[in-house]
Each structure stands twice: as structure tokens, then as C-alpha cells.
Image (tube, rainbow, N blue to C red):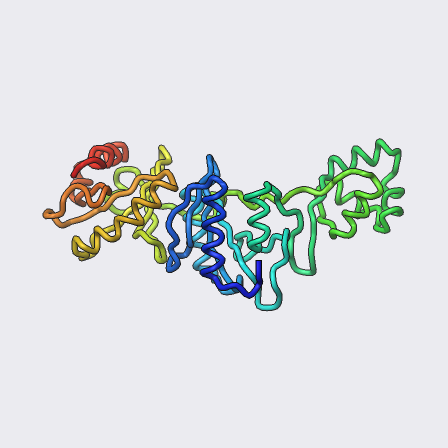
Length: 311
């Protein structure tokens, strides 16, 4: 891909790539902290495209990771360059705890199932060594730690660290070891993991908190908040009335419905206005005072299910 391509062009290519390779995708939301969601079987991606990967700040990254954890999704940034250089193919970068790759790398993963092995970090590029395989093959060749170290032009201590997962290797050293032992010893990088629970905090809040939901109010998303059952793990994306008229709410129903389908979550409006119907453009509506009469999160989800088909 041409490195001078614009962000909207990259987004379009990524969107088409996902669709043509069996992913169910959301619409593109360019004013959101993420650009789109995409699902293929159990894999749910939360993607953000940037021209300059240093343009994302810690608050934006935190919201992306929070949403990824809540939806059990893999957050991923796709970028063209940093402040100092263009991103290289098949190399994993990182910004604020989120993996970053070039569009070509993403294509290799989606189309060919090829995961990158090289990590860009302070001081250069590194690979992770399969220490167990390294030790087993070294012993099969009757090589001591020192023997292999001398052949690879590194120290005995370095080989020991590789075998025990205590150090990463430069790509050049890894290639040298693979030539000596005639076997692949580098590991692919897992960049499709879900952020750990301790990285985000989902607290009971308000009326939904009283019936067993943790609530996350979002700042830059196509919805107002995400609620997650603290006991049963179901997720609900919601918009709130906030003085909006019915025309605005109907327009907001489109991304709610879209994202709930891709993420596998429920969607709902929580509204005070008694004149608004129980369903807006296919999205259930629950009045805020109704929540006070519910005993549990299960009651809330039951009402959502009942109102999905209301006209």
C-alpha cells in the first residue's frame, strides 16, 4: 500500500478487506475513539486507523481498552507512520498498551493468517525465542550452552536467558540460531488478546448499578454508555435521552443497532419522556423509572427482549 495514502482511504481498504474475508463489520465511525468493529466467529476486533500513530493520547487509548475489555474484543491500531519513521511490514509497535501494525501486516493476518514475529521497542527490533524448543534441539545436537553461544557469537548467559524466557533476541541473532540448529525457534506475537480486567474498572452506578450492572459512561463513542452484568457478563450498549428529541434519538438508533449486532450485545434507550414509544427504529426503550421496579439485571434484559419487536 502506498505510504502516502490518506486515512479515509486506509479505512475504506480495511473495511473492504474485512468484508471480503468473512468478517461481519460495523459502519465506520470516524469521530469515535474507534473506527469500526469486526467479528469473525469468536474473534471481535476493535479497530482504529491513524496516519501518525503518535496522534493517539493516553485518554483515548484508555477508552479503547476499556471498551475492548467490556466487549471481550481485541483492540488494534493500524497506522502509516510515527513521528520519525514509516511503519514496517510484519513488525508490531505499541502505543499506550495497544498493539500497532501497518496496513500490510493487517492484510497478511486477515488473508494469509500470518502473524508478525518482530517487536519494535526501545533500542531496536526484537523477537521472542521459543526457549523450550531451543533447549531441546541444542541438547539433541549435544551442544552445551557455551558451544551454542560461541557458534552464535553471544554469551553463554544470553543463551541461558533465551531458553528460560528471560530475554528477547535481535532478529539477526535469532536467524543465526535457526541456521545453526536448522529449525524455527521464533514465536509469533499474540496481538489479538483482550485487555486484562485489572486494566479497567467497571463499577456499579445509578439505577442500573442497583440491579447488578457495572456502568461505563463513554466520551467518544457512537453511544452514551456501556452496561455489563457483574454476575452474568451480558453487555448492553445504551443511549440516554439527555433532552434529545425523538428525531435525534431515531437517528442515534442506527449505530446502536449496528454495533449491537456485531458485538453480540444488547442495545437499549433509557429515557424519561413518557411520550416516547417502547421501541425506536428497532431499539428497545426502557423508561428510567421502570428500572426502579426491577429486582435484577435479568429483569432488565427480559424487558429488552420483549420490546425488540414492538412497533
